[in-house]
Length: 283
Ligand SMILES: Nc1nc2c(ncn2[C@@H]2O[C@H](COP(=O)(O)OP(=O)(O)O)[C@@H](O)[C@H]2O)c(=O)[nH]1
Ligand SMILES: [Mg+2]
Picture 1 (cartoon, rainbow, N blue to C red):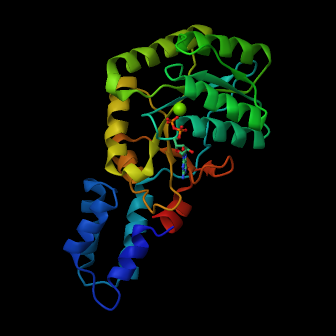
Picture 2 (picture 1 turned 30 degrees about the vertical axis):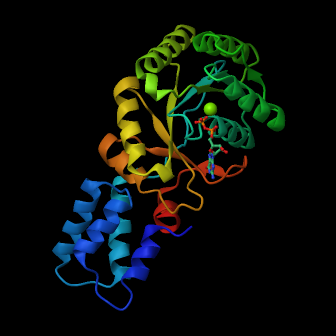
Picture 3 (picture 1 turned 90 degrees about the vertical axis):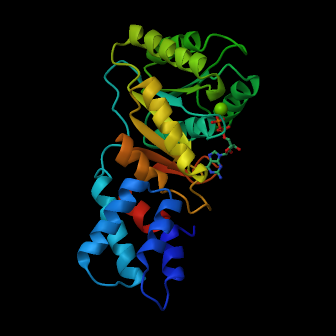
């Protein structure tokens, strides 16, 4: 993973860091304007020209200041009721894959899990999640193509609750081009789940694709506005791209923490977000 810190060090070998160039590098690294300004101000305060390694250290420290310290990656289920996680986001970001990976990860933590195929808008989405469920041997609740997604979540909740399942993870549709319907659909899912358990859904996780850069920030803004209670972000496709700066801008602007990261297409290419590892290895 060649992150932009590494590129920065390469770029400024054998010469002092030029702050205008640094500004451009930070902006293209998707950390956002506020963080870029914060870093530049810090460097100006230091009042001397710096080597690239020192600059990278300052960047890391400033970014770590705004990322939340390590917390539990997910809410804990209350006795007798599943902890419900809604997985939302634009098509192609990795919702279905992340739903499966998250289930697999939770099971690795000794939890029981059920999947709900609530993206009924595309037949392929139901098949894709079902395929993962078979492969990973995880129970799934699914319905026909074009079935009511809220009804799927309702039935899944009933089944999960009856079986004493710890976590119910609902994969949802992501057709942002029909935003109004999508948002209506999500609020209906929330209402239906809320009738089963007033505290559900416990988590609404937005999936964003790191390689889309600042588009991910725009998506986070839109979903935050429409859904109103995103509890975290799953950032996918951090493998290979060296892009992950958007984690910083989403945290800083919207105060939504990254909770999990995806680093490949396999079930184990996934894990909790760790801020220190992130600034050291990903950026
Ligand atoms: N390289 C890589 N590919 C990913 C990752 N997460 C998902 N994908 C791929 O991205 C594509 C879209 O994923 P999918 O889960 O179907 O997205 P959805 O439309 O949001 O449900 C698939 O080809 C996935 O295998 C990741 O972390 N890394
Ligand atoms: Mg999908």
